Length: 101
Image (tube, rainbow, N blue to C red):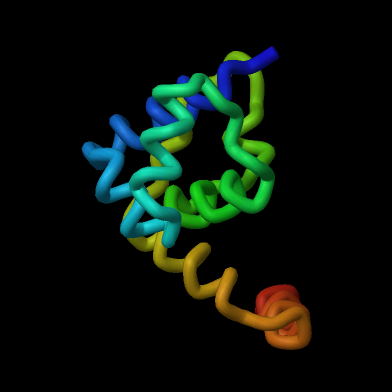
């Protein structure tokens, strides 16, 4: 089984973020993130989803076994952040537009 906290730490360190910066970018309280490490707890799925959005990755990327953390470019990260703000109808429309290009 993959060590989730180690994966979160690897992604955070790859970006040069502190726990505080991860908390700011994910919208989670810093005390929550710190308690995961102090108590060796596994974050909940909603918390992991917020963490992944902050990193600009999918949950499957975070949970993937045997892979190095994926580093996205700033433009890729911005694209994923903008995508996550779209509703389903807008996402479908954008995919249709991309298919026509």
